[in-house]
Image 1 (spheres, helix red, strand yellow):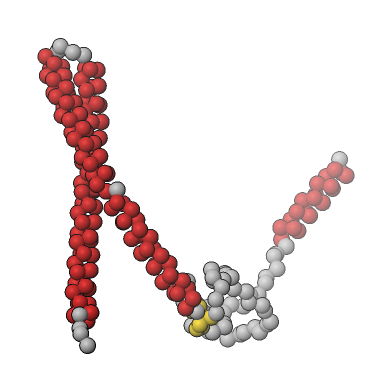
Image 2: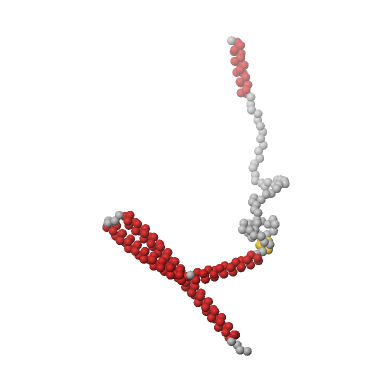
Length: 214
């Protein structure tokens, strides 16, 4: 019993000593925050890379006529960098324009040669399309009236409606084709008349020179 009592007293005494121990005090220095310019700089070697790179190459091969920027100069998208010599291209373009005008003249002559036959055919096609459209319009009106009276089913009226739309489209197309051919025929006739007047004026101007007697 005495030994147990002594052990308990020893534990209680130890706890009391731990509670009496104080925590150490740490000293801290504080300074008010202020705004100031940071003057400290660091110098080091580095390699600079561009954000974007592009390889500029012309679509054609030619001699450079003029540079608008120097090496290392900042440029923008769409900016003209250099001009290429285009004398040969301009000459080639004029040749091609001459060929185009010649081809256009040949085309007009070819079309003009067969224009009367085309106009005649277009007149017949337009007249036939107009007759078919008028006939289909009468069928449509008749079936519409019969449908209102309840004498025919609706599908018969719808069939007549579709046929009328097709006939109207064919008639409009035939009339437009005829009008275009007639307009082209008038243009050809006007050009032919102007050409004839030019030839007459040329021969009239040349006649006094050819009739001079020396």
